Length: 258
Image (cartoon, rainbow, N blue to C red; front, side, top):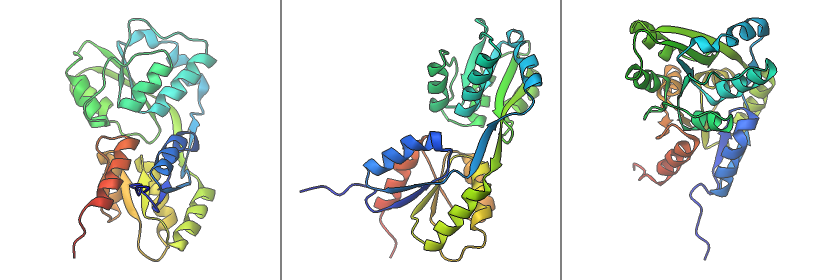
């Protein structure tokens, strides 16, 4: 007798970039769910390449280079290859979480620091215990990422700079596709991995009637963005795709109130 899969029959929206959504979609399919992949935010390289090249040529001035997302690693690697630069041997690296650390490893780098709590705030706290006022730090981030690490370092008197390597912007065509899907009323869960994705979703959903799916978020900042729109949400623990899946299964299996 075949055992029922834990996400059997559930319809789940995946809103992250297509290249990053494939493994998530496979995972929930294996658990019996139907994935709907609609990337709501375009992630593109920052436009001012001349400024980026000029600043990346001076990477050897830094003691730490901090990565706040896997996308940051991806664009950092692309620009390094494009400008034919080498990573300074003396520099240490920090990664916001497991996926970012794995991206660094794939790029031939090792994360010297990764927080227990996979968030910008967690990384800032972990880094605070490793640096001193004389250190120089570069934070790699996207245009809409929070500045938790940068602000914490400034508070400590550490020399901190930021380098924005990619931009996030809503995808209007995807928002229309989402609006049409929401009209069908078939979604059980909608998953969010960043505040910018939440905002793009809400723009598409604001005029749609009917009940919303259950929202599942990676990270407190993303969850706070959902709550600012007046909705409750489930928060992954840990802050990973696997943590999101576990949270959905726990929600399904939890006793329902009469």
